[in-house]
Image 1 (tube, rainbow, N blue to C red):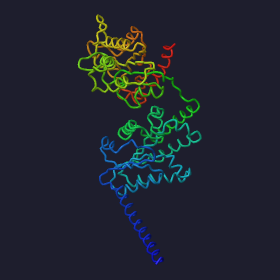
Image 2: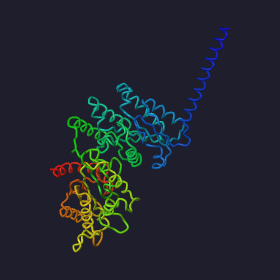
Image 3: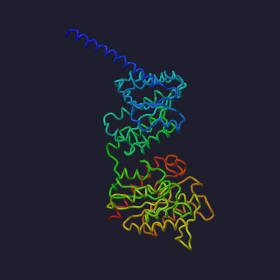
Image 4: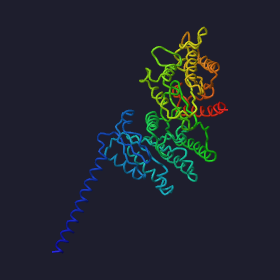
Amino acid sequence: MKKKCKWIIGSSIIVLLVLGLVCFGIYSSTKTEDRFDLREYEGVFCAMYDMDNISEEYFVTYRGLKIKKESSLFHTGQQLLDYVNRALDAKADLKAVYLGLEPVMLWQEAGADSEKWQKKIAELSDIMEQNPNTMFEILLPFPQLTYWCNREQTFKAELDVYGSFVECLESAQNVKLYYLGDEEWLICNERHYTSDFGVNADMAKHIFLSAFCDGNYQVNGDSIRNKLSCLSDKIAAERVTPTQYPDLSGYSIVFIGDSIVGLDRSTASIPQIVSTLSGADTYNLAQGGLTATKVEDRISFLTIVDALEKPDDTQIQEEEVWKGIQEFQQRETNENKLVFVIAFGLNDYFQGERVKESNNPLNPQTYYGALRLGTERLKALYPDAEVVIMAPTYTNFYSHGNEYMSEQGGILEDYRLAAKEVADVEKVLFKNQYEDLKVFAENEILYLTDGCHLTQQGKFVYGINMIEYLGEVLDDWED
């Protein structure tokens, strides 16, 4: 009887195991079929490094493509290549394959052996050649600078792998390669990153739009070698003498101005850059389109001052600047020294607003009058605060600011001189950002997106410029 029971139990276990394996096979097969059911999709997106914040919706919204994103990271190049092959087998007319490829991982997977490395890249090249109607777009990693600085013994060799990878694939007709790992504004700002390789949602969106939509950061063998050489020099210099910025951690800096400061509220904005690199608390009370000049039915510098004076009696809750005003008013500590940075002038010039009225210099419907009234009121409201009035920055619009935009308006230089006069009369600081920023016609392609607004690098340089200036003048102020 016991033998019979043992036989029955053993047989049952075997049957259950067989059934389990069959069910698992069916389940795995179903999961594989589900994974590669690409009938509704026009392409795939997969990566070997953190690209979590690039979403499928971006491809639909900005590229008009329905792309299936693989949520799991691939830890080897072979896994990724197998995935791509299966996707192409599942849908022969796949329009696009987007890849986040990590060349160093491929190199290590090949045992740092040149022959095996070449074979690995050749396998990827063969996939491209066999699918000429599919566009392959490859975004190389862009880790933060500290990542490279910590790789003392290997960073030069690893950067060389990046260059070799691009050189091996650049001749393919259906491949686009992107690299922005040398961009100072990106890799030197730790707040952009969620990990060594991953970036926050705002930065992921910017990178997506710039690379996959606008074609920026596209590289070939020559261009990436130049980029990598500059990056290698920067890493080496940073390791010897790490960059240090003035410590402004005892300050709260409030930016009030137009779109030069207020267009961006991400970690790449000027206030955020100042905060990240200096330790200051910063507040963004700026908004695109604003003038210092008081204009009917539109908010301006004086409207913001009104909101600071009477926070419970304001009419601008629906404006973008309102969030910054609330954050400033709700700040947790009053121990920090307060600094206001006032940056207007470009819109006043573009709209042809009057610069100054000699018979009524405090006329708020002039640039000079509004700037002076607002400054006086801020000084009265925050008597211990320091105020910095900024000159408007360079623009190539209207003959580089040398055309008159109305009969009563002036050229851009007139607004700069008026800002300087207000600072002198009110006995506050003046910063000639038109000249100090060193953005002119000769280099505007690096620093301006549209002849007026700043690029990411332009904002980064502006932020550093402000930190260094404030570090110097605020030390003098305390003394």
